[in-house]
Every structure is written in structure tokens, then in C-alpha cells.
Length: 114
Length: 117
Image (cartoon, rainbow over all chains, first blue to last red):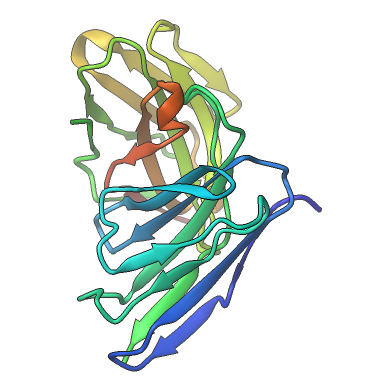
């Protein structure tokens, strides 16, 4: 089935450690996104990529890094520089276009820093 | 800057009651798109509807209906005869339409709907 796969679903990390969240899509979409969700705050854009080997910062990129070496994959690294990394992370993809297209989301990864 | 406000953080209803979710947005763009997404307990967001800024016709899809009023910058969502399966968090979102922006969405804070049997 076509869709977006995020892993792991749950992740625990000690303070000071980097952690990488995986996002893979088989929808043949050009654009991919990472959002962070905190209780009561909706979703905030971390990074997005419209094409392979290119990506842009979103509204809250500090403490995060991404890469886009393949069309299907857009991993997110939460670095030790991220002050408050405990959150629910959602990956999405869309057909590249004029902003009219819908986003397709994965089931999310919940990161807890101990 | 774009902004989406969902003033209701949580709504609790009894099954078969109607429930209306409010969404107010701010944008300086004349062309934009509005969306509603549903987030069930499993976590992924499910697309419900997209509406462009030039189409103010209300839309009905089964028990769901949407009321877009550009004059008040609102895009409200009504669930008629609610069911327990409607329990979820619902997000309103606004999209820029420039090519370079891709499909970046600005989300509201979400409204949690709890439908009791």
C-alpha cells in the first residue's frame, strides 16, 4: 500500500544525545515535511524539502537537521542543541505544486527525553 | 504572517448531537487554500477538505459540512448527528500558494472533540 512510514513509533533519549527519526514514502511525492506537535499548540513546521538535495528551514528549525539524498526518504535528526525535544513528530509528503495539494501524513514518532 | 486560530480547545457532546468547530484565519494573501484535517488516536492526520479563497460555496459531505465566509475570515466545520467514531482532534490549516512555498501549511491549535455514547 502507498503511504508514509515513520520509525520508530516511540523513542527515548538521554539528554545530550542526538537521535534520528526515519521517514519513508512510496507515493512518488517530490515534497516532504517535518512537523512538531506539542499539546495544545497544533503543528509547527520544522523543515521541508521540495526536491532531492534541497531543503528549507521552517518556523522552528533550531536544534534540528535533515537530509534529502533520496526522493523517498527525509530523515530528521534531533540534536543535543534542541532545548526541549520531547514532542510528537509528524512527517508528511505532497505532490510539488502551488500550495493547493493536500499533505499526506505518517503515524508519527513520539520522542521522550529522560 | 499567516495565523490560524481555533478558539475551542475541547468540545464534549453526546452522540447524535451536532457539533460546530470554529476556525478563524489571518493572511495578507489574496489567494490561499484552507484545509481541515482529522487526527484520530492513532496519530496520523487525515485530510477532510480543501477550499480555495475564491470559492465561498458551502460544502456538504455526508455528515460533514463546511461554512467558508471570507468577509469574517472564518472556515467553520460542522459534524451533524455526531458518532463516537468522530472523537478526534480536528485541525484547521492555511496554505500559501506560491510555487516556492510548496504546500507549507500553517495549522491552528486544534480542537479535541469527545463524543460520548
